[in-house]
Amino acid sequence: MALIQMQATSDGGPIVQRVQYNATTGRWHRIERTQQSDGGWDNERHELREGFKMAVDFGNVKVGWINFNTGGAPSYVLVTQGENFPQKPDNAHKQGAQLLVHLSKDGGLRQLSFNSQSVNVAFNELHDAYLSAPEAASGKIPVVQFDGTEERITKGKDANGKPVSSTNYKPIFKIVQWIDRLPEFGERTVPPPGGHAATSGGNGAARPAAPQTTTPARPVAAAPQRSSVQQRVAQLPQEPVGMSDQDIEDDIPF
Image 1: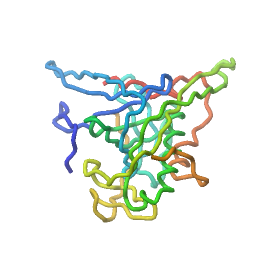
Image 2: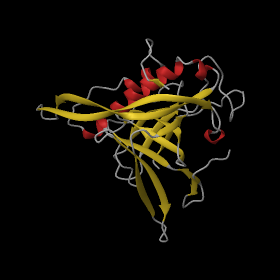
Image 3: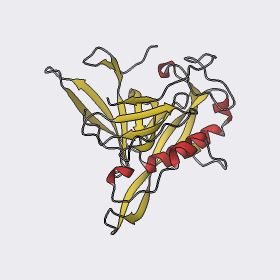
């Protein structure tokens, strides 16, 4: 399947450029990864300002456990949404998700991964709004506008039992448009609400996905019932606030 905004990796395989959200600053960046003459890689960061838009693909969502703090490539243990949730590898992995988005203004296809509680909550609300929309049942996907942040202060205790607090920023999303699912998103593995998964915009059964372990125009409002993403992503264990990786998607160092 054809994808846009792709580059060849050092082993000849394609990669999809990334977009990142930092919950401790409330800022978005698109990351342009380019290979240097010496074979190394350089990440060029471009900030995305409030009001930017992106098409969000809920047709191919992976959920599970992510560790960005490996000192190298992130570690992902993920399954397609709706499959049995994988076992937590260790305490360094945080519950999160991975999906594809398409940025407006030539930003192109991007991969978004996150394990921050603040982002989990925001996407749970967005997913609930998606599930309740008749447009989603017809196979369309939402175009979402970033409308600023909401400050969230968490209080707890550090490893020594001392009271601490942290401030993080939950992104605010607003659905501004519905569009047909883009071919660039590839095969649909998660069906639309009440439907069946399809391949690249057509109808058909989805192929089961095995767990992956790798080291490489309406305001959004929560629906009364909890969605499967909410059940699997938002129910994060309560951990000491002093663990800084609880609420941040760290810069990926490769």
